Length: 402
View 1: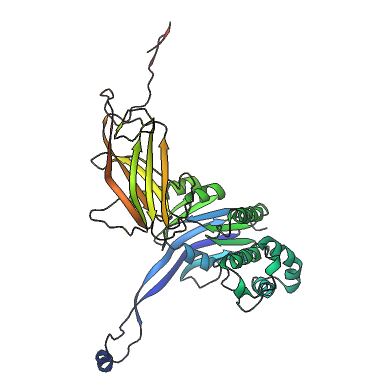
View 2: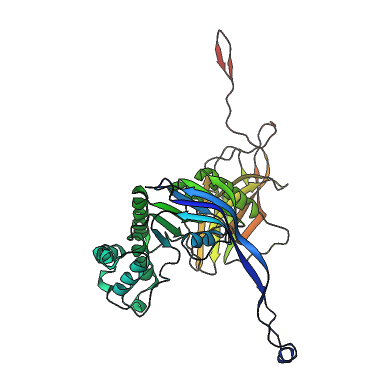
């Protein structure tokens, strides 16, 4: 087995920008004639990207929408050609780039298994040997001889996933498709991917979840505007990415939000769960956020930060840190954050509440400096924190606690 399964060196891919000269009126068309779209310039979707993945390793790729993640996976999967650099892959590729894209609606599930698996590199005899396992994994035994057009989207995705992971790939490319089907099936998909990894399959995983990258991957790669912003230990890469995205999410003057999800209320509760605007330093505090969903969303991130009136943020957290997945249907709901103790010095503070897209690329709603509260008296020690304290004086002959 080669010590390197995937080698990418100085990879670059560019696309032309097209600007339309299409006439807007019949008169303009008659006077100027129809002119085709013409490329006027180009942009680099990827530039100077280099990394390696060894057999049995998983590389997790993070980045906001448009960062170049899918372009990278497409090039690795042989879709399109690079304009710069090189890609070397040792072994058979299994690609989960667009589940079900190669299916034919008028063919049966059985026929689609053979067509897709043979296209992935298996012989007909190999497909026959694995057919039962593919269908069983997809949980589609009663429907396998029905036309694919009668399948739901979820059924098609399960079948596509099952075919991909049963082709015995040496390199598996996964483009954010671990959320196939219900929770039980998602767990089965993840277990199968980890089995492949344990058996020496190299995996490149695109994900918008920093927590998933930390949990599953041996390496992390953060793409920003087509270039590598960080590459290395997953927790370090995920932390750098989360910090940048959180900083970008801070509100700008006169900023407006799309409000697919709207924050309709924020309640601050003291340690006894009573509504308050006064918190004693060192006591617990609870934030109850009421929201309304106007448009169904597959996932979102709620954030809570605490800041001073000068805008300095002293604390920031969000649901993604806790590993929470929040598919949201139309309607209302609440999300609750409990802090065991709030060790801030006496002053006025603000609770800032935001709702963001999973990759932090879009802000649905944000309440900045709208929810003020006070922290009660503490000794004038300076600084911003007032944690529990114990001083100890040690002398040669005695030990005195204060």
